[in-house]
Length: 339
Image 1 (cartoon, rainbow, N blue to C red):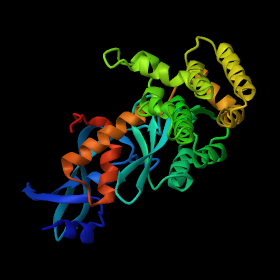
Image 2 (spheres, rainbow, N blue to C red):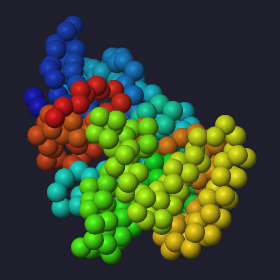
Image 3 (cartoon, one colour):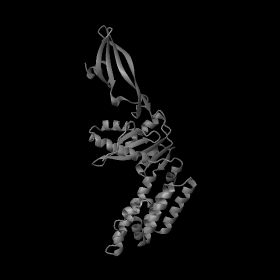
Image 4 (cartoon, rainbow, N blue to C red):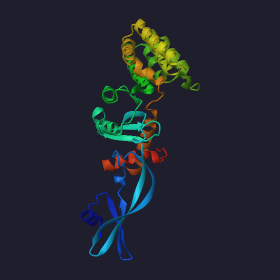
């Protein structure tokens, strides 16, 4: 007796053969459902939480004159799509060398991974939008980075949902511009005493003021670097003003800060600030949507660390489908961060 016999004799694809019992003249084949077959029967979604097992006896065709029973464990599940997901985050993660990426969708209220797509960008979300339409999920808000690909996909498929640009990605984008600005200034000051003051201050510029080390005199070093160049001083303090957008009690106050930031950037006549001001102006509502739905992709960043830990412990997964299933079940696991 084998799993192959169960398939050919009864047409069952998603079960392993366990054992055969002969009791009271009845042949009972005991079966176990394959892990990858555990999914929501209504929406065909594998984004489910296991909720215990019940045993069912199913009468099937006899073998000769002997009655036959298929006894199988039925996995009870809780389906996140059936419960109408309301707030999600979308982001990509790097899964190895060669620029390999996965696009992850998370339910921000439960912490469950709803979707794992190959690659990054809009194409990786196609099957997720199908699930959303089938389930008629009423998604209220979506947190994404400033990726044009994700933005277009969300606008097209979730036209009634609020888009919340992740605050950390907005600040990260500005920090990248600040690093480029410092680098260009450093090169312009080549072979001067002022250039030495800018050497090694990149990370000081990017640090939040409250995180500067007193022991290393980081605040003093930063102040000396800022004194030598007025544009660098302006750009640095505009970085600090940008952070204040998300630290207000009321949306109205945050709106004023955004408007003031844009005005100051234009008055400065610094090209980098003026260009970033255009970005803020275009995406003003998506940035301020944070005050309607205080969500971010932050929980996904934490999940990314879990995924990396899981891969290290398992020395990688060659079977991509198995790895995807492990991710969908990740919310049920606990991984200590190592390395």
